[in-house]
Image 1 (cartoon, one colour):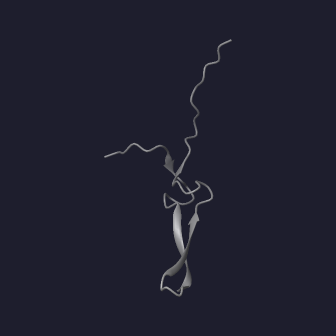
Image 2 (tube, one colour):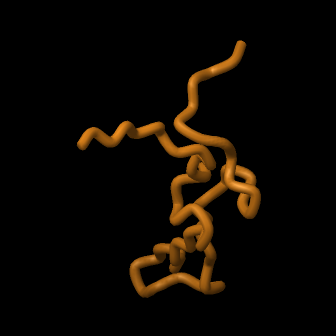
Length: 60
């Protein structure tokens, strides 16, 4: 079944727009130290903008 999506999948991240990267250790409380990295192309949305623009009529 096809779902309605606002755009197509990002070609750079294939829809996996955010990832957690570990620093390879734990802090003094035992928590895993991670940072979140977002895709530069889609800015963390996982989709790209549609290439067409809506048609606008200009009235004078």
